[in-house]
Length: 153
Image (cartoon, rainbow, N blue to C red; front, side, top):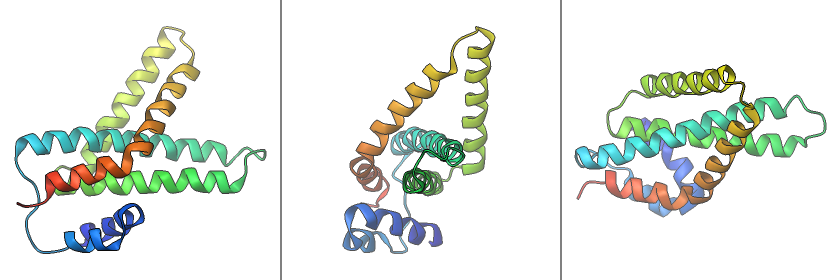
């Protein structure tokens, strides 16, 4: 329940406290394999973007030409996404650590393949940036969908 309460802080930023309070009870969450698969797929995307923004904020913080406020905003987005992924994994009984390891292994493989082929990393970074930009834009609506899938009938 602590994870759900922690997540409610994140959720309330987008939907308001009333929506969040309706979720906090002692009922079991999860509504079957189909919902679990959908939630896991989305959680993986959220995790990927959380990691992407974490590394982006880290790199930006070393550039004196980038405003501290922008770095803070990117870092905040990263934290929000990582917390959301953690909550989603927990809600369907998946290991966040195992999923993180899989995401990082996939990222290393992608980078290795690109480097081996002599491809420019800028294209990969740009593609992930666009993907994550869309994910953040759709985040409130998609999280609402995930919460509905996970809510008991």
